Amino acid sequence: MNLDFSSNCPLPMEGGRVRLAHGGGGRAMQNLLEKLFFPAFPGPTTGLRHDASILEVSGSRLAFTTDSYVVHPYFFPGGDIGSLAVHGTINDLAVAGARPLYLSCGFILEEGLPLEDLRRIVDSMAHAADEAGVAVVTGDTKVVDRGKGDGIYLNTAGVGLVEPGVCWHPGQVRPGDAVLVSGDLGRHGMAIMACREGLELETRLESDSAPLWGLVEALIREGLTIRCLRDLTRGGLTSALVEIAEAAGVRITLDEGAVPVSEEVRGACELLGLDPLAVANEGRLVAFVAPEDAPRALEQMREHPAGQGSAWIGQVESGPGFGVAVRTCLGTLRPLDMLNGEQLPRIC
Image 1 (cartoon, rainbow, N blue to C red):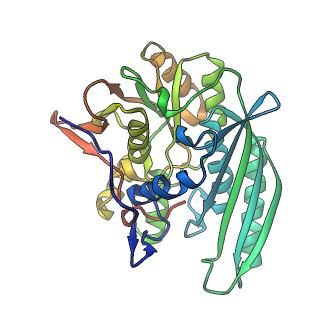
Image 2: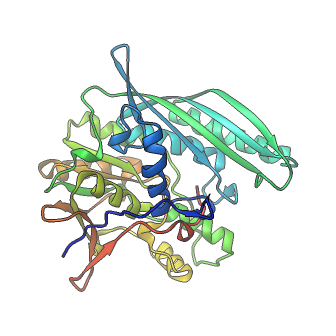
Image 3: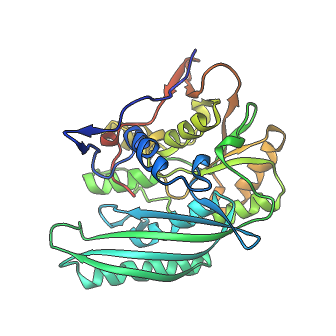
């Protein structure tokens, strides 16, 4: 079976204008990045397709990342846009093997935003940063006209110090590597969607939003052969694996029965017609680990509070072509590909 999902799609254009669903994402956004942004900004580590750039500065390696947060509603079960921005930025640094140190934040405020909401968001950011041991050291505020800002948008940047000996990126992944995830999938996205759509579920879904550096640091201390880590945000596990498979030129096969998804998330996804593997997480990562170290890595992950639900869900395989597939309970292979932007709810 050929699982080559490489895309030669043109830029998502219509009438000379960029055509993307609200919030962007998925295959259309990937094409836009590869055909427009990457050629325009050929940074030193652009080709590595990582969540942070690694920069050599006076003999040290720094990781640098930036992200924007446009989640609606900006308060949701298990968190808010403030704590989400801190956790998301920290996690982009962590999966690059960098100890998070400093953050910046730009606040785009809509005229009429209640001051109490803003205070609550700022306090939440401060608490999340303090808990994670990072400092918000600079920022900016801008106000846009009423009706043009959806309340509040945040843009963050983060700087971290890459740990000695760490060199993780998708190009390191090779056949035989184990694929591990750090917990059950889809809770962040479905918590927000359930809140937004007014779904009445038997149990209250809460976001998994959390910092991942402590879990990553535990893996580094163990001296394991890790090829690549990726946090599972917009597009979920599916988008992360497809990006890595394409960058590494490998095939990744998952065992459907091994992928941890709670019954609440699975039921909510069925109601909304979503695949839990493509739903966003904000406190989960996928790890590609050398097969001889996979059992020890899984043990270490399960011992950490952020990885207690960790599971070994698949492996990297050799063979022609590249891509991602799930081996179903019936023994058949179901190919996975990135969703189109309009199928990705705005949840981060």
